[in-house]
Image (cartoon, rainbow, N blue to C red):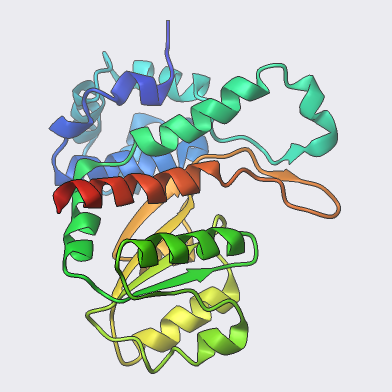
Length: 255
């Protein structure tokens, strides 16, 4: 019987080489598309041979490509946005809520988190950038990093943000928080900084390909059911907070 993709692969991730990790990232970020692909289509899309894909699925612990696809089919993390009025009909919503948060931590590779710790150990100035949805998380991050002794700054208004364009340097660190990864104002600011400097950019976004991820030196992705009402976006930000705190704990353990 097929089991959840993340549960099936959690013990094999450390054994993947660089190219296999790229294939794994592609699967996670494009799961809805991949589960509809034949092995020939998947191989052609990634410019590799079908043999490479077959060996990749076996290295993940599957008996073959069909077993791999069946696992994707039973994985429920990529869902359509949830209607608030239908929440009561989702009897397993508590379980999904917890699973999304846990998987957001579980899929983080040790290499990526170690890279962030390495950058933090260089004591960079930290600039925290958010969209409207992640604004309060930005405030928390600023207090958190200041408490750890960093020079951290969270520009809360567009005016404050624009005043930073010429102050950020290569040796600094930017942390960009955006669930969609598509906020135009945030993207515009980063591109303006990149015209003259290239600070280390860490982003946290949803687990789908997005423009912010493409600009980042390192990206962590979160799983969450998208829940919108007419007045407010209730998509959970718990997983994003968990990732930030996990990185902080790993940094504290390194000093």
